[in-house]
Length: 175
Image 1 (cartoon, rainbow, N blue to C red):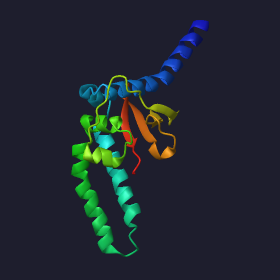
Image 2 (cartoon, one colour):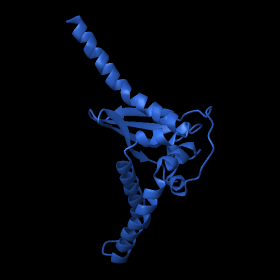
Image 3 (cartoon, rainbow, N blue to C red):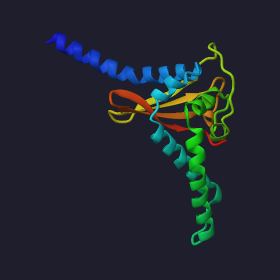
């Protein structure tokens, strides 16, 4: 009976530690600019769709179309459609490496794909918070080196897919 309890305890500890290990490995792959490893740790269609949703929400918040203003609504819809291919092109392993290497990661950094050189001694961002959302979801908030305020926080969401924790969502600061 004690062996079974110990086994269950070890399995629970491994389950809880596993997404932290996935987060660390993704950070190491980004820091090393290992595009193959980054590609394997991300669910790209979900990640791209999430960023498209963020861009569309930012457009709506910025323009704030009035009720019945069909032209503004059309403009927002058109801008969202035009942003889609840009996001598909920018949200790649190289684009994610560029964002991770930036001192101030934003949606603009991703869109312009500014490449900042990194070195192996560059510290990983610090983990500011984390939580499980159900049995197959894990969310983490990371802060770039030297960041103090929440305005530079990057939200990450991992989902358990096929036995692996995959990055499925990144919420970058808009400015």
